[in-house]
Length: 157
Image 1 (cartoon, rainbow, N blue to C red):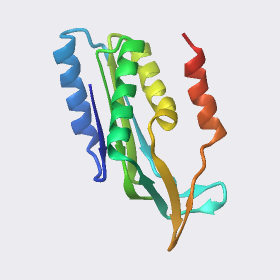
Image 2 (cartoon, rainbow, N blue to C red):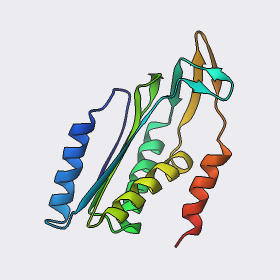
Image 3 (cartoon, one colour):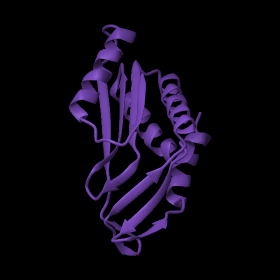
Image 4 (cartoon, rainbow, N blue to C red):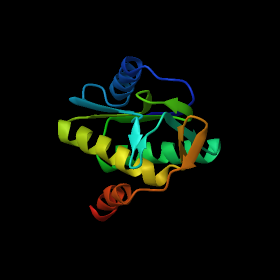
C-alpha cells in the first residue's frame, strides 16, 4: 500500500510496477487482477473553457486522509494492495492529476476498490480547487454528483 501527494507529474508504468510488487510482497501468488485509473484535468467547466486548475492542501492532513482511504479500500474489498497518487499545485489542461490502483485476487474486488477510491477521494481527502483562465481564478464548490457517488459507498455494506 502506498500513497503520494506531490506537485510533479507521475509515471503510470512505474506506479503500476510498484503496486504489483507490493501486492506480490504482501500476498505472494494471490493477485489475479490489477485495476488502475488515471484522471486528467479537463479543459472546460460548466461555464466554458478553462486553462487549468490549482489545488491547495494542508500537507499533513491531506496525506493522512489519503493513507486512511487506501487502507479502507484494502480492508473493505480484501485487496492484496492499493495505492493512490494526487497532484497539487498548478496543473494545466490534459495533464495527469490523480492515479489510483487496486490489486486483488479477482477483478471485481480490484474494480470496486478503484471505484471506491475515486468516489471517496473527493469527499474524504481535503483538497481545495481553483480553476483558472488567464490571470483570473475561481474557487470550485463541491458537486452534488460527487456527493452522490460517495454516498452510495457509505450506504453499501
